[in-house]
Length: 279
Ligand SMILES: [Zn+2]
Image (cartoon, rainbow, N blue to C red; front, side, top):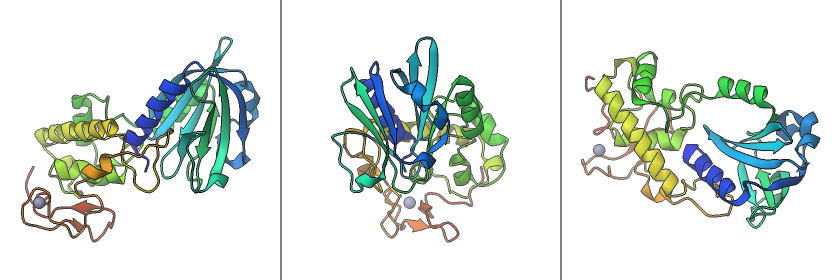
């Protein structure tokens, strides 16, 4: 957390509030928050924010100055947040980057990260291309269905870890993997290469429905997710299995939601998501 829907919500707010704004100052609180590109920091001063994109769970800010474009990539996976100045956090000492803007609807953007599992990178175009290739698989919202089918048919192993494998499919983490698999009625441990094409088609449609619905709800606020403007995501209210161990199956099949013995973060219904059915 944040996962793809939360990162998408962040990207959309940044576009609305800051596209076209000029970066006047960028203060880095601790040098180790920048994974790559710290010596290029001074270039960004005076550059205009031209583009905001989401890759997987990361948000990429594209800055332009004269004829050159450079990027700042903020990793949000695990604990990172991008916040406007008015949004208060419990631990303000964990604001590690402050970007001041002029000409936008917000004067400041902060990168807050209490556990520092995420980083920022300052990259030129070639650096961004390398970064994308190395870290991100297909995007679940834009990959065509036939490509998704082909991707799964050529993988081995269990289904849930594959859905969460960022270099294969970028953006899905534990919360949405649980929710997608329950709705698609697939056991987390199903063998990927034994899924029928029609089953993968159902999984594909379910994955897109869940992620789009979550985006429209502002994401899920679990473990401290806030959008840049401080709003909490409401998709948490629509979670069916994540964190629901011991509760009755929402399909009313009569069984209780359980956790996998081997992997305690996997929630499922042993009846609706049986691992014994063929196909
Ligand atoms: Zn059930």
